[in-house]
Length: 243
Image 1 (cartoon, one colour):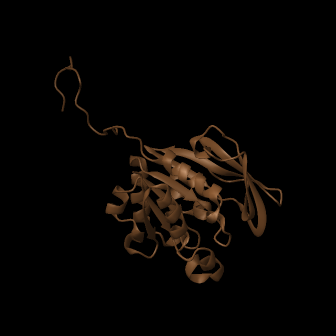
Image 2 (cartoon, rainbow, N blue to C red):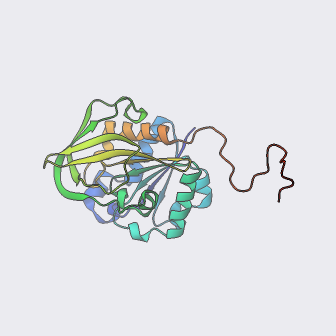
Image 3 (cartoon, rainbow, N blue to C red):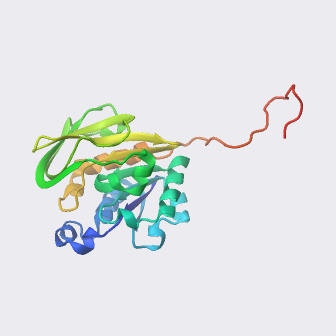
């Protein structure tokens, strides 16, 4: 069974009645609910818990980490970011949602500013599937349509995606690379754009299906990990002894 940790800074839910009305148990709550129905082993973690809920024990027992943040990126401790990064390099999957593009962990893994254009005007978003054979798009039609979302527009300052899964079009005319995959070390990373806190995006069944598919894709493969550092020779050396 894939072990998933859903991380959310959980600040909008405490400050904005629209958000708390849409997500009374938090954004992490709605995501954990549909993941549990799917059969994943799920736990949640939030910013204000000790170590942001991402203790060494939690991380070592996480196959895929989902990350949602917005207001408080700077409050995430650098040492926790480094621990998460090391786990990704070791093989833990990471799914970064919406405004998590500006999170310390995503920027650290990307090595760029991850900046973009944005506008909050309740616009229609149409997400086109541009990689229909990819596992993340399984069961998804040619496009997904959200009646209200925040606009993100190009240029999105990220490295060239290894795989581009979705491209969004917005009512105001902008387009955006909304589903991007990367490999970092032994871990897989998926950035998925939709999910502004004042819209019911995570109640959408097709959005939920994309996240479910992404977890299955990002889960660590059952294979022996490489061993690094000094290595004894496999065959006798003609040149003499080793140190």
